[in-house]
Image (cartoon, rainbow over all chains, first blue to last red; front, side, top):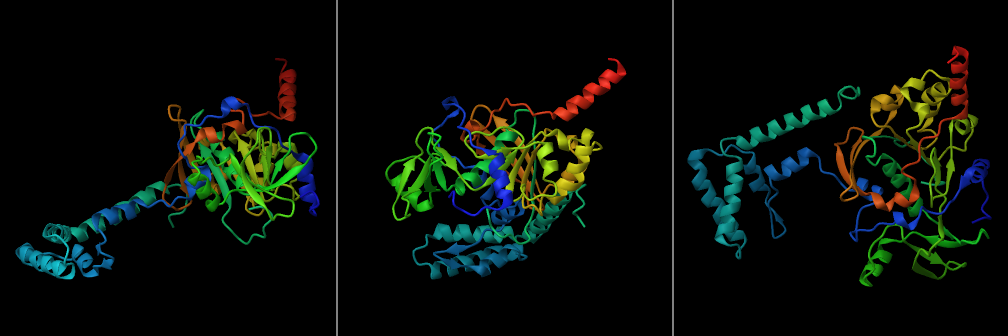
Length: 149
Length: 258
């Protein structure tokens, strides 16, 4: 380590730098729990409010590894009240056909969730409202920083 | 970070705010200490011989092995030491009085313990304003008067405000400035800062909660365990006032006949 070729700047730094022992052992406190360091804490992925909102409001439907995209489309479709029960029973039948071991109540819960999100276009309205709030918040947070464009 | 050729990257200029005793200094010390330990390459033998044992930071595999043996995780207590020919290695707990050696450069305007650093004041910055010493490094500036709003028309304020802080990116510095409230500080740095942090400290759990706003990204709230960093700085150390400034102030008092 001492034999490495050093630049003038590094030599200057070496002349300035010191390495002193840590403060006394009274500063060594450990609660026995595994904590993050600053770098670890800052590196953790942080979902945006909009992503959390999106995941809760419009759940991704994956059953036994199979992605049901057509069910997710119904979340933002206009589901008419007069067709609600008929559509639900169709979805339940399809889910039970695809997944033999699926309990009836689970198929019913999935179909009801999907159909009620899009009931009378409420899913679409929620998505638009959520986006509007997110945009407004971002503008408020950035106010005065000159980055809103 | 150390000794790498760097292409254009986002500048790391952090403005760390928070009430008095809210863990601001701990946050900036922690940021530098993490990088210092991550890049460590030796253990200094404590007998003034200058002998350094080759060592390295633990990888995830090493931690998995330690955990299987029932050893509790601690980010700063274990290292991997190597034989001279680097063929053999062993994970050890850092023995008492051994110090960690790392190529990561740290400049700080307050004292650090257990980390190799250079104590720096406005004099050293002015001397190196055209030099290359303050480059590729962490720069910890704890409530430094040189960026205070009231000093921004003094010669040191002008130098720091207009020349030094504008070159943070080009110098590839991680520049960390603490201040209780951001309106206490030179306006240019408020706008230059790329990451803004607001600290709160809970004495019950010893956890610092830092709200981090990194550019246009959404705010992020992170928890930091303060005792990991307490052995590395003195929380009661006051910011050092340059002799030149004291002399100037004293001279004015003498002239005014106070």
